[in-house]
Every structure is written in C-alpha cells, then in structure tokens.
Length: 207
Image 1 (cartoon, rainbow, N blue to C red):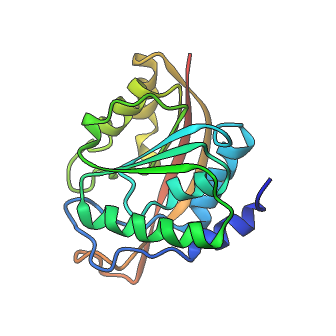
Image 2 (cartoon, rainbow, N blue to C red):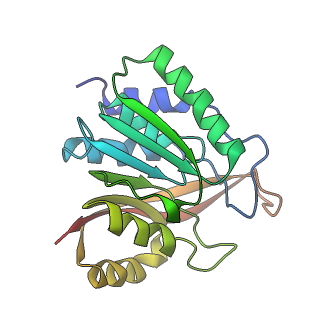
C-alpha cells in the first residue's frame, strides 16, 4: 500500500486544474476528495494495482494519475482536447517527481469512440449532459466494450438510465458512492462561487 486515502487526496489536490475551461466540453475539475474516495474504493476492490486502466475523457488526468499512484501497470489518458491533454502531461510529470510511480502512461488525443484497447478497469468522469443531453451515454457504451469493470461519475438522477443501460449491455451495478459535487465558478454561466450538485459514482461489473 503506497498511501492512505487521505494521503492520496492530498497528492491529487496538488495537481493543476483548468484555467480557461471549455463550456462545450463541460470541463469542470474533479474534486480531489471525491477522486480519492472513488479511487480508494477501486483500490480496495483490487481493480487498480497491477491493472491496465483507461481514463476516458481524462481532462487534467486526476483519476488516471490516481490509479498510477496506487500501482496501476499502465494507464491510458484519452481526451479530444489538446489543451486538456497537455495539462494532464504536466500533472503526470509532477506526480512522477513526487511519488514512486512504476507504471506506464500513454496519452491519446482523440475522440473516446475511437479507443480500442482492452483494459482491466475504466475510471471516468464524463460530461454530465448539461450542454448535450446524455453526452455520458457514449462514454458508458465505450467502457462496456473495452472493460469488465467500470467506475463512472454522473448526476444522481441518472441512476435509472445507468442501471437500464448496464443491464442492456449485460453489466450490473455493484456499488454506488454519493457525493455533493462542487462545481466551482469556472464556467461563464455559473453565478455562485461554488454550486453543489448531487452526483454518484457507480461501480459496474460484467455479468
């Protein structure tokens, strides 16, 4: 074991976040405490250490980098936005300097739909569908096609949608973590400094 859960969250809190997030891509930073909770569950369920991981729509790379800190064998960082991927690479260098990381990282600039590699675990925080309804569906369908274990973050009201889509693809929900997700005032339509929404992280496993 490399770190405690709180130690992991502290390391993740040191990473750079978007300075000019793109509204269309819903580039909100994943809170380090929430990322730590999700990653710790995955670690304790033996879904990270020594595994191949895909961070779909990786953004700043916080989830994928967390898997590397916790001993992933290889982590793929996939994002269509070059600026996001550049930031993830900067964060990777920081984590590599600060932590004892032995796994490999591969950064891929592309739409997640084109990613074909099979992995042990997908960990993702897709768009919540605020700008495009069910924008998260493509992420789930891709995850179903490349992995048998998925950790995926969505608005809590998406529960029935996620359960139905999982069943249709012969997956089952095994765990749900619920959070008050802080959306900081980084996007132009935000009025309050921090707006909190109810989200869940679903662990989904192949039947």
